[in-house]
Length: 493
Ligand code: ADP
Ligand code: GLC
Image (cartoon, rainbow, N blue to C red; front, side):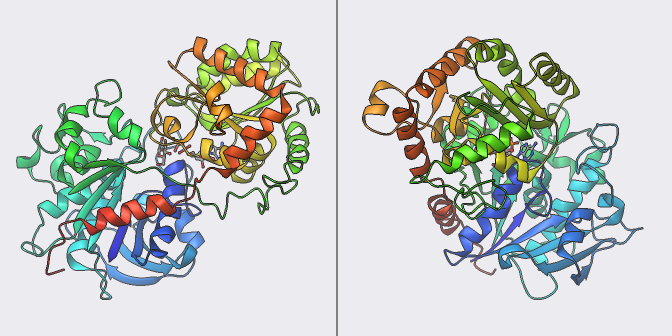
């Protein structure tokens, strides 16, 4: 079966979060099951640079919904893991430095509707008319709002594609909080019919919703954990789309993300100070020493070292950690934070580090290698999110024998088993889970982690259980393959 993934990010070409990891790791996992997956990505400078010389397949200048005055072409290359990658090369839209979503003023690029409108339009074109070299997908699998319009265009093909068979469509929600909302004036600019600008269609409270288009027009919907699939059907975590999602409940499934165990393996990770595995956990001590040094923390092997690797946003609950910090420090704990985010949150964390030298260390950078070293060197990885569609860092932590301390939401609830008397007794405990997402409950979880840390044999038992937990992609890739197999494939494609 031929599947086209459409997304705005894919590691190692371009990454701002977990979406990039998933779009990188799922295609090879599907390929291992015999499926043929290709990717379509926007032609950001980093993508073009990484892929090097590419084959020009189609000149798209002036195609419906695509720029007519500037060059637009479809390029292709064989990418990582021998997965073919299509790139929408449109310098007027993508040839910009810095963050892929935000301009130098820290605000969304003002033409993001055109930038990602072009992505959805090109995906639909590939679905209806092929790549110009004989390949056409049977399934178009779009990820997050940036790819949301693909399904809308497939439902309303424009001349000369009217009447063509279309691929089946799957839309995966990685985060309902980012919806791609734009003023109504963008509807005709993007070649969308006004007749679809209704609450049953593209409209979300008077705006054009890219994510909503994906939810309404795709044949099947998925999100990245079973618990999040339930949560988003309620008003509390539905971001105003819970009604739409309830209406489509029969087509919505939650399939847990996995971890790319080739890159995330403490026994073979080139970023680490020392390799280790569940049978040789002593190697973790060297990583802890290196981490303490890298973050300016007192080099004390006995100090429980808590860490955060995260976007520093409201979603991630980092403000709760700041509130709980005095309690953590009073009990001899250390904190290392690797992250980037809002200026407000960055300032608060810097102030905390300045107030507790040697005990709180911060690196406000985006650093892939360092994120591996933090996972390897810490004792506890904190993810106190207010909502979390899946979350990958807690799974990396499990694999690195770093006990995750997480809130009981979304994929965090689905991947971490709380330390209790009974879970310790039956060997299933893998970390610390707290609810509700409030500072009181977080403090209690920190206290419980500190108490277990004083019992090294039990701590080690939980580490070994965590490292033995299956966080690979295989089971989830099978679930996606089953989903594709059940799609209504147009016979003529
Ligand atoms: P989200 O996608 O919501 O940010 P995930 O946990 O799914 O959350 O994925 C985050 C990804 O980004 C992980 O791979 C994590 O290691 C990485 N990451 C987050 N912040 C940083 C950082 N400052 N430096 C390096 N990697 C980071
Ligand atoms: C989103 C979510 C995160 C998830 C990731 C990959 O960024 O915030 O929870 O792990 O997508 O699916």
